[in-house]
Length: 345
Image (tube, rainbow, N blue to C red; front, side):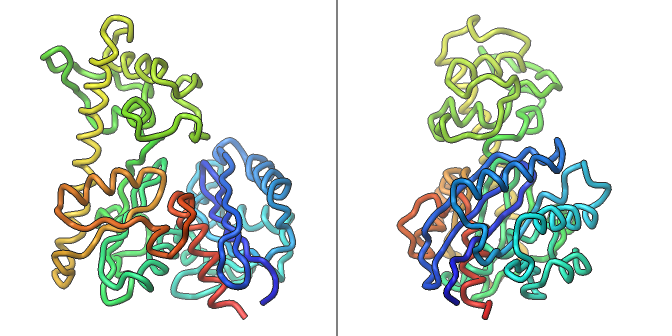
């Protein structure tokens, strides 16, 4: 193989692309906002933006996706077909290979026929690639919206189920993320000024507000819009959280909003730690010192969880021997690019 390889992770909120050469050296990583629920033209615009920045139209394209879940599609099969049809207008079919988990790599047409093996399998690419480096561990990818918790045993990813319904049942898929999760989904009440306050059941604030207030997320790195479309700077985050309590940020000192943000952070971290323990409980052969491997923009939460569980912690990018920190942010795109490099002729 002499061409460059582009790994595409087509999500419902972003498109991520990782580019590597024929030796598996990561060359470029990019994320472009793509609110796909607003229409397929959002994906078209994202692809055009990526081509303009990477000039990768003629690369070998390795595709994975979760965007088929958005509600512009009647069901997941229609979503897979719609995304692949859109991609076909921009990518050479002969150069396009769709990741289909246990079925391997499929052509776009075969991928449409076997959509169940394509829909929302990006986590499987990441976990399978990590398992080649860390035989026993727990891979945890916390993105903007969801958390994937995948056990690794004897060099294999060993999820209990592979579809989203089964994974939500086993808690290997948890709908909580570092940016887009509404805070009302974490708790209906919160402590403030020594009392328990009922929270408004509205999309007034999200986890991005919490982690920006606490300095764990760089506001300039977030491509998602906030709940009120205002910036992610500290005062705006405090204003959004205050609305949940039916008040304004200027009615209390900033340190009180920081304290409340810390409380929400603890609740989310506990939620994820509890899910990790639930997953571990189903795999008695996992060593007690098996590490947590963190990926995604919210992997700092995985590190917190590892400390709580007294387990070692590793970043995805160090596991795959990459010096590029962004590789951990965009693990599925990196994984499909590197898996394609090894598996495709």
